[in-house]
Length: 328
Image (cartoon, rainbow, N blue to C red; front, side, top):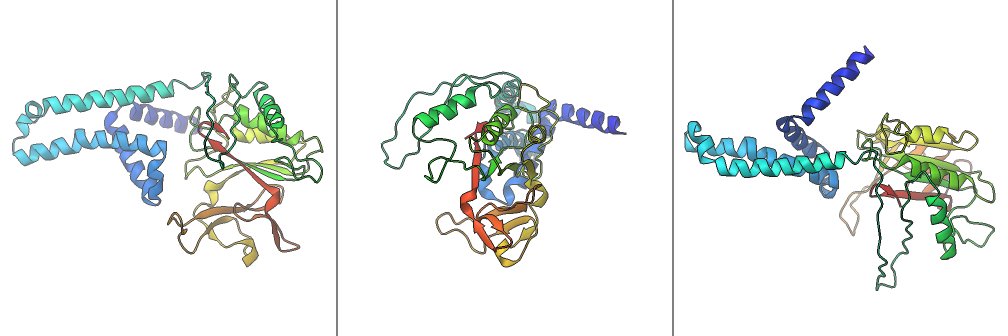
């Protein structure tokens, strides 16, 4: 039964990939479904790609049909719209070729080169880059050394408050789980980062959480991943550190469950939804609140909840967020 389901799924995927009619139609449906509840998502790269496919589909299969119906002469549809149809087809082919090129990046190594650029703003952030690394070598160690040399050590030692991560911190690694292969965060890089965290010089007694909201299509246990060993999922990364508290949490499972904060007596996992729009953005903000595998109660906004003392500790929650196709 499982084999039949897998073959059916593979067959459907191939059919969609080989049919622009289905690809464009599904892109349009997906765009409406994913963007409708949160219009700000229209700026996401995946939404923009879906919008491009959807607009071409509308042009080919809807607008031309409407034009023909309006003329009352369907027989002349091909002659009267041949030039426009050809232009749209060429645009569609270009889009599909681009998508194919991007898909072909899976399993390949890409080296990025960055030129040094300094901001004139006094509030600019420091950005540290190590080139020529694939996530499965010593690139992260070089990055940690570079940060330390520039006065921003990864490890917080003693009571000086210098450094990013203390030995008992709860470190949340926000990855991208919505897509497999090159669409997801590099699991080799995540594994290297987890290793660096748990190898804290003072001894790591905190917890590392690999988490994401994949917008109802996420998975932290994918069969095909962005890694040299394509089978290495985020879940397998977490399980490779059995002597430490390293866990995963897929927020897709609690996205549609509205809850209140711990301080209001609600201990359930879910999403806290603000009562009013943000004054600066006008957006009603929501964020996850959940208990980890090892019993830590985490509020993404407020920090770690101490049930006994009924207080939050925001200083113990460190968030490292994915940026682009990697971790930043």
